[in-house]
Length: 108
View 1: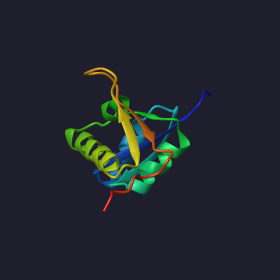
View 2 (view 1 turned 60 degrees about the vertical axis):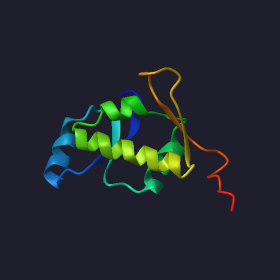
View 3 (view 1 turned 90 degrees about the vertical axis):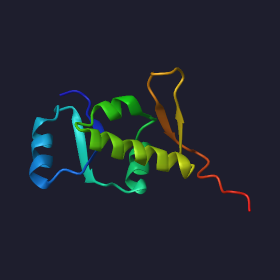
View 4 (view 1 turned 180 degrees about the vertical axis):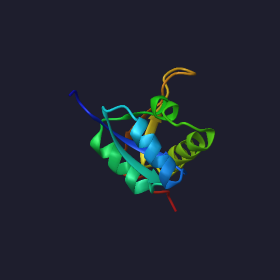
């Protein structure tokens, strides 16, 4: 078997729908399924990887609701200065990195 990819699956689905999604997932994905994960869980995933390809992550969401939850999680992480997100060209992939210097503090 090839390399596995640790994947955080953010969902509002019930337990049975979560199991169906897990059963139908490709075998190369090591899935961590969470209902409304905390920022800390998303940050932990970023610590394990160099970056997250956010477009790929969004495309993996099966419903509009899941995509919106994932997008708002990203916005909250950017707003909190916990991650850096870069999109080099319009309509291209968004790469997300954990900030190595930690969150910036606002000047008082």
